[in-house]
Length: 174
Image (cartoon, rainbow, N blue to C red; front, side, top):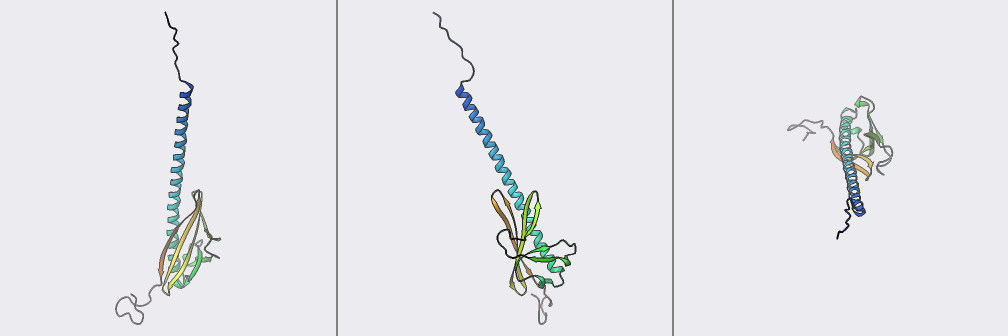
């Protein structure tokens, strides 16, 4: 007696469906990982750029204080501002007051476009004493995670007009 056996070769339908499911899952996870890494990279780039813009503005405010005819006294006691630096001569730079420091970004803040991202920059003053002011510089931008910002502050002091050290007379400098 002979048995008729068919030799079956190839894949069953279930094997093909499972293989397609595995390949699809791998492709989706690869795309998701790529998008996550791209967003993280863009966020890091924007944060670095915003930090540079904050540092630049702090230096510009110091230059404004040093080159302005009124010097330290040209800096307001409080409020939110932008610095107009369009003139190449720092002695001609001017402060532009903003109506408020909020919402973020406040209306009238300086808009800077870098790498297809719009950054908004502004700063505020607070008087700590007659010879020291706090400057807070803020740069914000909007990305897929919402509004992001970098904030940095520094102290600006009034130059001493007395003598330095001992024997400084009526107004010695520390």
